[in-house]
Image (cartoon, rainbow, N blue to C red; front, side, top):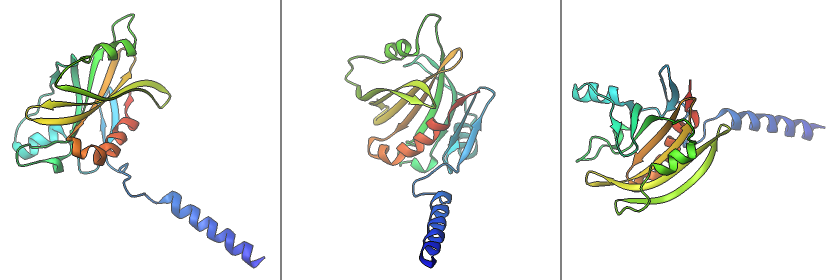
Length: 192
């Protein structure tokens, strides 16, 4: 009897300690971005573009449209620790939106938005994924922005009237290191 009691206590303590502890690499305890339109969590230590530009450079940030995808910027966060001697930051995530034309599907809009053959655009993976029960599309590719080559992960979601694109950018050598951070944003993204 004594052995089974000790085994039971040991298993209970082990279960509580495993389930209650954060594991190495977990970045869920971070910040939240919320507007009347969207919500997502982002890693601790990251800044919104508004915070970054106003605090570090005394500059009012203006959201940009992304002409490559014909989209409007809704939100953006960045890792200020990703700066280099030549760049203020090299890791960031922006959320864009575009109208979903009547009679169009998310898949058709997604497929028509990227070049099929381009020397400055190299597709790594192109997959459909399910995120919180919703069909989504994910494209990982490399492209130049200025002089730097970036690895980009775009995830497309259908909202009620719009398509939302979470576009995650980093240098190719840093992609694996940042993938979990990107996933926190993707997994928590909600259209309100």
